[in-house]
Length: 121
Length: 113
Image (cartoon, rainbow over the protein chains, first blue to last red):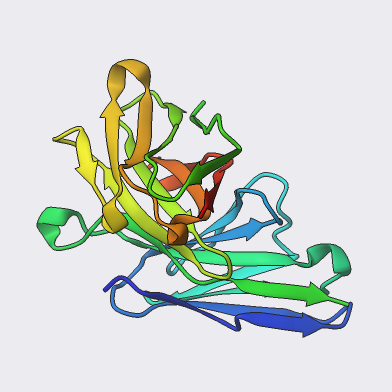
């Protein structure tokens, strides 16, 4: 259980185009999902918290208009990198939080997707 | 402010040797603590977590971790390392109502045959 999928696993695009990345929780519902960015040999940098049915909460320094987040259902959040440029090339990782506690039958834990490698030419 | 420190950036051990990865945290309330592993080309996998109760927690792949409140530590251990354990290990503490994770910088583990 507790599987999170991410699509695509890798994408190459031209500078100026937009790229959409999907994150799905396959066997649990997630009101809250998270989007991270990871640079080579570094830790995860939280970009934003995606809230189902409401606006995402962005971390300081992350451009809202650049990284559009939509959390339209309890199992799907999308990250759109708009007008991508080479400096946006990175490894993007999503996670979904199983918010149910153990006595509710859940785990109250974040589960991670496999990541999306974005290369902007 | 909440923070997580993993003092060791890189560790090399021989296969079959014991392993301890250090993690110290700073958090005002009772922490929810996690260890995740990231293998090359793979996503982050939860090894174990501590929420409450027994301070020694068992995880997958033979790992365990001990929560020590007095030392603000949550060190990860394994009695005998396998070559397949070579990976990046991240310690994290959960904060806030939405359980945002505060991450350490990670420890890269190499295993010599």
